[in-house]
Image 1: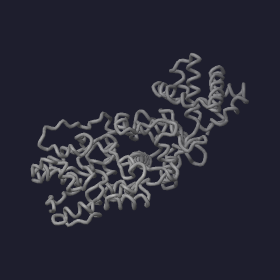
Image 2 (image 1 turned 60 degrees about the vertical axis):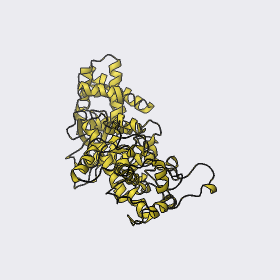
Image 3 (image 1 turned 45 degrees about the horizontal axis):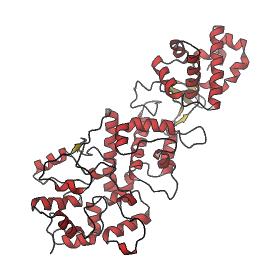
Length: 462
């Protein structure tokens, strides 16, 4: 005998329809009902549902949907399929429709949540209170949306408010008549971080609806090229400056959020490196790719829309933590030294488009030189004046950049720069220093284009 379930509401999870039937008809043996609807041994799946041919038969009189339509409209299969190879999509699509033959399988079950990478990252089954209030206002039953169950989603993509978790597993959907002890996923963070998390929700919902075309940087090569254009390319053998990238990713999403989804990046070879430089054959998890797409899209928009050079780590054009000291560079470019300690060359075409940032060694070199002068007992006010930055920025340099610039070449350049600075102060100016030791001036040739004017001899200035 067929089960007369209500027709699913927009973006409803399959188990949500079953939960509504159980609640309204006061079904006492929920397990027996689920076995009848989904088949023996299937349980109450949310993300990937197998044996949908059985569900098709049970709901044919009320829904009239095929197993493939149920899979695409009521499960999270379309979202995960956007990150899988064609072979894997074909395999899982078949498993969803037909019940797998367990007798012919050896080893781990290949359609489990762990094997498919479809775990919900510990966030549990989620709902939006604002959506439920809207359901009440429209006179329809409260239901559970697919878009709220996607990995890393902690805010509603429609209302922008924090979601509430009913705990792991689908059992929370069947507790409508019981007192709820749910958890509001209100994660601390700045407005900038909250906006980034909402972007994760919006992009995830778009992928569920439209597939991989919603990703701006869907392939590792595209992500790597974008990172390099934003100045995250490394000056050594590594493909990216992973240390700085990790710092900026944590700043974008907030450490609390990344801890919640178990994706706090730790170098070397963090998940960020795998997402950007991952080779063939490696399993692609969905949430890291979504996070990187949100991160890169936000940084790229910021650089593209700014009226001039801007540090890619800045939250906005006038971010007080990222003030630039801009000077001319060869080939009609600009050299920028940020108060965060990052330095780069800024380039764009004649129309002010196709902007690219190329990191330079000036930031780490200056930071190391400032740290050496500080160790020698120079007043920080004097050191800050030498480099043309505030004392606060100087402290940031020495705390972060100097520690990250311990490579031998950087240390050698910094020591030469310190000798030149000391000579300038002893001689009463750059011209006197040049007359006394022109060889020392030539030894800091690699920094000529980026040195502050007060460290550059008059005849050598542009």
